[in-house]
Length: 531
Image (cartoon, rainbow, N blue to C red; front, side, top):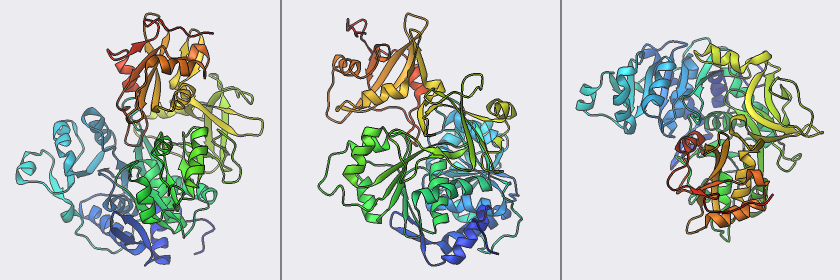
């Protein structure tokens, strides 16, 4: 059968690509290489192993592993036999971890031995989990102490390589991706097979990705970026994927050169962090063509592109909806995240869902023109799903502006917008100004309560290694670059910002901390900011 588009079922896509590229390398991890055929056969083994363990189509299986090839085999194996994959953030513990395993109805968990102690602390609250497959082995004492049966990876993986014959359809659920927990307990986005394949399919031509491309990622495989925007993208392109175990600014370019990578993905402060690394004479001597992500300040992006000889492409997206807004290689505007892609409808609206005119900030609302190209809903959370789908539009909770030509410009998270002395303040714009200071590595602006009932602005700042900076100097710098009402009252210098492993700042922790003993107050210090 000839397709005008790729198969919209993940297992079928894997089989098709493996037949066409049997001996070509698909995955490189450290010093190991795996062909398309290797990956397909290992996924088949996992699919059969699931059936041997009594897992059926529609059952939920959780994965809490660091980046490794086995992660992909398990994920692909579940897709081939119809189970629903539930990736788990490896930093989770306690109630965060219990909530995901139990709320997702997972009956089987893949767990690295490093996290076994975390599981022990919550096992009494896991009402549906029947078995745990442990990577790295376990002792007889650990097995005896566990209330949930343990199995080794080697025992689980002992299964045939033959394909399984279970009908899977584009609308069938393929995964439950939980939000990253920057605002508390996570919601599970239930995604069908077609969703991520279409998301990657829409973006691949914009990235000009093809068989000769080598897609590098350090982002965790439990994240949409690692799975959809790297793994499935490489599979669609019939190219190669390089998987790193974690982000390291000091070794990043060495890995790029080692693997001859041509594209990589980023989130959060990654580009600013790389741009602030000490310059080297061979910076531009690399193979990267495209850096693909979001959240990079325009000035930093321009310096990065010039220094490393690549192009940064940005977009707007969420686990719930994919990447509906994106730039192209040949049509970029400074500061813009691009235009809506053809298969989506996008509007900017006020609090009453009335569309706002160009130049006025509004909440991004969304709906697809094709079926099964976004999440099916929040798993087991019908009230949250209905709340988000007000008036038949998905409400993102993000603010943006649109210019007269239809280009979108991200403003802020709606919840991250600050209000001080009757003025609305964008935390994104405050951070952008602070981050432009030559001694600052990164920052986060949050609202805190002081004497007045309204918010005050606090800026949490991480300096570059070896740098020192007085808060008075930082405030003077800020006052020259932002309105007086946006200049932070409070400053706290920190060794690092609390983040998820995908480099998103956990602002709710900074808000909870509030005004700490290490927080400097410009009003108490007598530092005035002129209007």
